[in-house]
Image (cartoon, rainbow, N blue to C red):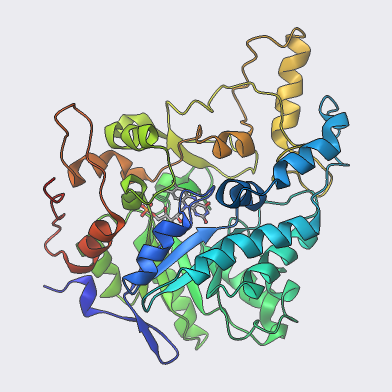
Length: 416
Ligand SMILES: Cc1cc2nc3c(=O)[nH]c(=O)nc-3n(C[C@H](O)[C@H](O)[C@H](O)COP(=O)(O)O)c2cc1C
């Protein structure tokens, strides 16, 4: 029986361990986590979600405070159209976050940045362009486009000197999304370097409707392979979503996938950015504690723990400080949901908004516990502490377990 280490992901003349740690915003896939994946010969992702806030925390900058000060006058106004990001601030924050990560890179692997299109930041094209260009300026090895169809994203950086040398890929959840992407980008004469096919068991936002359970990863991966074959295209396909053991990964590698992208197993590692008590929530979760709901204002279903404090919270929209989900007209679905509740309870006390959440603030404060479907199995990957908690793992332990394990095994947590 084979293990993941019997396979390699090839980009040009270079080979990598075919394990990619997926992007997890907001700074759940930290630089430390991504750097471990790269050091071990695979690929790690950082995320540029809420990058100005991430920079403030990582480098003690004051982007969020400065923006809040500038727009304080608007806090009680439900019209957020004036609340714009300063493009220079996005560029600087991205260059710091990406640049410091690249400087710290060791080993033969790669560092990519996860770029979500749904972070529309009240100027979708301009902000996405700056995010991607600044990441390339800062030397990132590659960009993974996610949470959106990205029909115009390649064009936004087509003039960048690194447009043809950086690894650029896209996450899709259907052949249809891939077809649209390829068709729209045909005139640029630049194919994606990789295609991540993300199935319905992944964490974060899902590229499916609430009928997600009727889809399955292996079928979509197969359809994508068939389509690429028919079009005579050779692009590495990377399977993602619900791949929990090395053997799960091998089953995709043996059927033509070039690599796997994984995330959930790494949420309970020391290097993951979630607070320690939240990691214990992930360990404790049973299958019944996990749901896919529609509270994300992006319009995509999202998987999370049912006891996430974000669910039903009624905080005032915080767009003057954050505002990453404001669309091109300065609107976010949470603002309407909040205002509806405020009109019903004008004193504003104990406000609860059930149908949407203020995702920026809740993700920023680690109160929206988004997770993969297999989170309920994390407890089987470690042992208990004498106090009744669960022992955190190192990213290296989890990475090597994916790389070398066979027979559906999961390596026991190292002894204390
Ligand atoms: C906590 C968490 C946060 C995530 N956040 C993002 C994100 O910000 N952007 C994204 O494209 N995918 C996100 N994902 C999806 C992962 O990158 C990955 O593709 C997927 O979860 C792999 O499936 P697995 O978690 O079952 O291994 C997230 C996943 C998890 C578990």
